[in-house]
Amino acid sequence: MSEDTFQTHDARILEVKDLTPREKLFTLRFADPELSRNFKYRPGQFVIVDIRGFGEFPISLCSTPTREGYFQLCVRRVGRMTKYMHELKEGDIVGIRGPYGNGFPMEVMEGSNLVLVAGGLGMAPLRSVLWYAIDSGKYEHIYLFYGTKSYEDILFRDEITHLLKHGEAMNCTVKLAYEVESPSCIYLEKGFAPRVCKGVVTDLFRGEEFDVTNTYALICGPPVMYKFVIRELLDRKLSPGRIYMTLERRMRCGVGKCGHCIVGTSTSIKYVCKDGPVFTYWDALSTRGLI
Amino acid sequence: MRYVKLPNENFDEFFNSLKNWGKVYAPVKQGNIYTFKNVEKLSEVSLNYTRTMLPPKKFFVKPRDEMLRLKDSRWEKCGEAEKTVLFGVHSCDIHGLQILDKVYLDEPADPYYKERRENSIIIGISCMPDEYCFCKSLGTDFAMSGFDLFLHELPDGWLVRVGSVRGHEISWANEELFEEVSEDDLKNFRAFEERRAKAFKKKLNKEGLADMLDLAYDSPVWKKYEKICLGCGNCNMVCPTCRCYEVCDKWINAYEAVRERRYDSCFMVSHGLVAGGHNFRPTRLDRFRHRYYCKNYFDPEAGFNCVGCGRCDEFCPAKIEHVKVLDEVREALE
Image 1 (tube, each protein chain N blue to C red):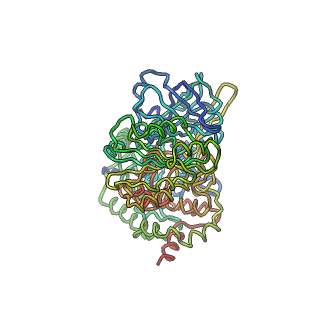
Image 2 (cartoon, chains in turn purple, cyan):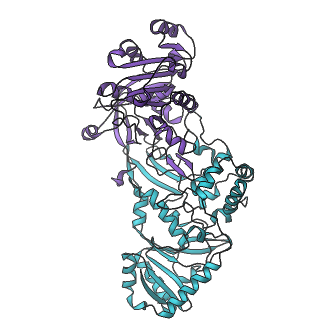
Image 3 (cartoon, chains in turn brown, yellow):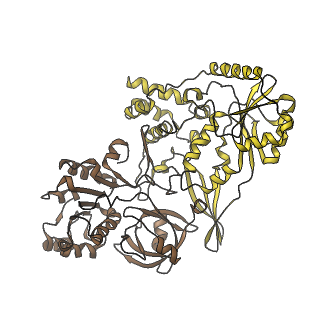
């Protein structure tokens, strides 16, 4: 195994879909059928995409392992590598290695309520959790609180509107907060108020009561978001051990060698790539610098 | 531990025999510094060297290292590990390598590092501390493992500790060069160690160091040193346990590319930067503190990440002293 730690495997792009002007959804499958069959992952894990000769970058898996035969990556065009990625078309081959990281402890949370709190691109890894939870049917109730900039920035818009309409039948409550007003948002708000409103993601907690002994919160979003969401959850007395966050850092290797994702102080050091990227809020309290 | 004695008159022959086990690298004086270089004769070697500028990590994690080569749009692994004998490694550097082992050999192992490690022989040598050394404070002044042979200076030769089967095989192949250890040799060995223990000038107070540092997160001392530090990253390059690397793909010509990795430094602005422009360690204060926290992280199983070799002090252009910084942080807290 160690012989090919840094070797990447051929994966073919089956489909490229524009989610927003900045984000594309890539559906991929390993060229080797055996590899494809054996590719198992957990929600919250990530892979390293290799555009050979240009570089590698880590991207979280946004598809659910309950749907086999393919996996999906949501890529925002934001830098050099993602620009190359966005130029790729259906049928092109990229290298993939992984999955890496710990992922969310889905088994531990079985039978509980899940509160997914997503901000912007944070929707991508949580989409994996969302569909895993809905598909497996092993969770009490699923809440998705999604904060987005504008209507155009809503990722997986058709899935979100579908769940806004029919979510309750799947034990799933979706709530959406947008910041920039537009006719489309107002139209959405008219149809689904009070679940769609203008504001920030923490506004969506208003009026919701959770049984804190039977609830887990899963958060992913831009670094500034964590503090506010966690304050909201702590106000409701949700234990720091029940708050899961997935974090981002610079990563080169994905396996705890290259050193970029080291966080912490003299008493506790974590590698975000191999000890994370999913941490509890308790981890953040005992390891300085995580959030 | 198995002990044998190598008399001075056989030293030259023993040294020459090492070539049978691989290419021999040993500390050599070069200008003002020492460096591990390929040597042919014992006379080239500086047996009493203080420290090399680059630690022996350069043989296992190279400053620039080709990892993969693109052939027909697939990566092929680069590089065969050559058989090497590292002669004259100090005990702090042996401890340094063991800390690197913990990182690089942890599953999934780094194939390049692993191969090079397996193909190398480590021969340690005793040393006398200079004004920068503080390995004694960290307990890295004596290596109990991590070497094949370890030579301790005696008035009339070397007391050799055999640390591995491979080490035993090396001494076995030259059986006629070695003698059994006498009572006098052991007495001399102990006398040397005692003399050495007294020669340390620098001392690190490591009592509760990890907790003390954690509490001193907002210490004004970090802010003071932020202004003194040049952010050059020299301390990372010369540190035997710094191992951050950056990866980059390079085109050699229109159809051939290599994936190369090279040393990175946590003092560089780009170290904490992610796509989209967010930097997790945006100021020099963050980066300076980060290095001290990384080095002084206390792993209950393996101890500190610092081995007290004194390189970061000696090669710091701003003359920042590791121990002094830590002492000042402690003082400011009290």
